[in-house]
Image (tube, rainbow, N blue to C red; front, side, top):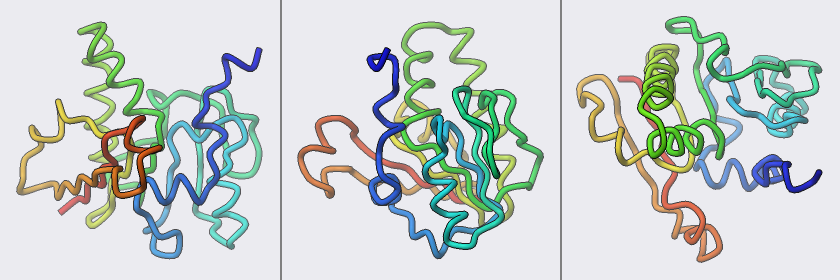
Length: 171
């Protein structure tokens, strides 16, 4: 049933990168796309550009070169492992839903969020949309540089669906 297919899985790589404010040539590696979608479109695109250090994980993924089936709760998030972690309309959307519905689920997402941040190399970044305004102000300033960009900069069609994108850089 097509109504069960996430819309964000169909966004072009150009739109994903534009929403997140990322330049594909400047992504620190290795790169992990959390919730990469069934076909790992962004992962495949970056690998097609010659990046062999790009990986994706999604619970609906068809496994292929660099793309793995699994949830973000099972993602390989070893301390200091990733240069860039990307989550375009995946992790943060589900985190927001959990935050509004279930304290137990919200706690699991918050723990995974912190594991994601700890998995960054020094200078690495976690880029995601939509933003998590209930959480980002709580991050200690000395460890994390948080840049929130309003999506109104991309035009009214983006602004009515998402409020912001966020890039958190490990200091």
